[in-house]
Each structure stands twice: as structure tokens, then as C-alpha cells.
Length: 224
Image 1 (tube, rainbow, N blue to C red):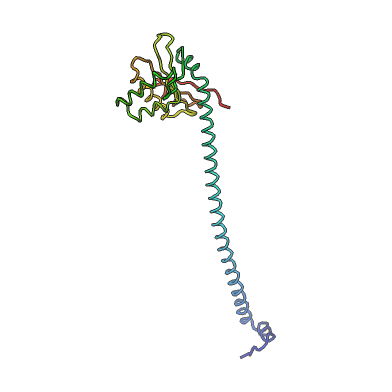
Image 2: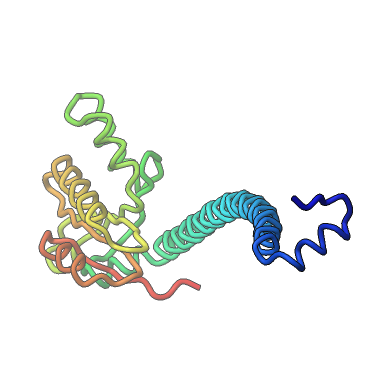
């Protein structure tokens, strides 16, 4: 049996004995491979952790961006809505004169008591106090974007235009203005009451639905 005492003995045995040489090589390669696999596993684990952290950061960034984007959209929609209502306030009487064939038009300030508004407000307030309408119904009238009072040009009959401003038409807008106009009509049986939607963005389906329910559509010009 060969005794291996020094490095030279080990190298000489490896040169002289193929079986020993192959076993020696396999053992070295095994150790090398195990070390590489361990290092690779550590690298993969680190990469996985980094990827998880990055995914979390990206997800948080996307959420924050979407939230901010929604805030901007909401702010923009609010500004557009304010712009639309401002245009309605400035042009409402003239628009009703054109679209509803009415004259002597005047804006009714709901819940106020100026000369143009007192009769309207006294009537709805009396109806509330007498229990002929509910508080919700009273509030619905108060929430109306504009009421224009006037006289029909052809019949010379008194008329109220109940107007809602909406940037984009929706079924809720149609239902709201129709319900409010019906309520006002019940409180003023001798007055013609018209429901009007003042809007900007066209919607063929909703426009058809509104017309079917007797709503007068007045489309605004572009808001800058």
C-alpha cells in the first residue's frame, strides 16, 4: 500500500494511477461544484428578495401614480363643471328664450327672496311646511342648478325651466331633472314646467333617452 506523506507523494500517485487520478479529480470537481451551487443559491435568494422589494416599490409607485392621476381627473372635472355652470348662469335666460320660446325670462334664486324668486320659494316652502312635499323633495329642488321663470311666447302662459348642468350626460342626470320638473309641476299646477339639460359632451344614446322623456337638450360650446 502506497503511503502518501507529502504533496509530492500525492501528485506522483495521481500521475501513476489513473483510477486514483480520476477519483481525485471527481472529488475536487464535486467540492468545486458544491461551492458554486451554494454561491448560486445564495445569489438566487438575494435576487429573489431584491425582486420582491422592487415589485413592492413598483406597486406602491403605480398606486400612488393612479391616485394622483385620479385626483387630477377629479380636479379637472370639478373645474370643467364649475366652468359649465358659470356659462349657464351667464347665458341661461337667453338660451331658454331661444330653446323654449319664452320671454321676460328671469333667474329664480332658489331659497332666496328677491323679486324674481319670492313667489317660487314661498310656494315650495309652504308645501314643505304643510307636508305636501318631503324634506328630500324640497332639497332636490334646492339642488337644481338653475330655474328660469318667464312667459311662453305663443301662449302667454307662465313657464318654469328646471335646468341641470352636466359635463357628460348620464341616466342619473335625465332621471334627476325629470323628477324635479315633475315635482315643480305638481306644486305649480297652472304653470308650464320644462326639464332642461345643459351639457357639453355628446352622447347619442343618452340624448335619445332624454328626448324620449321630454327633456329639452341644450348643448354648450367648448369650455376653455
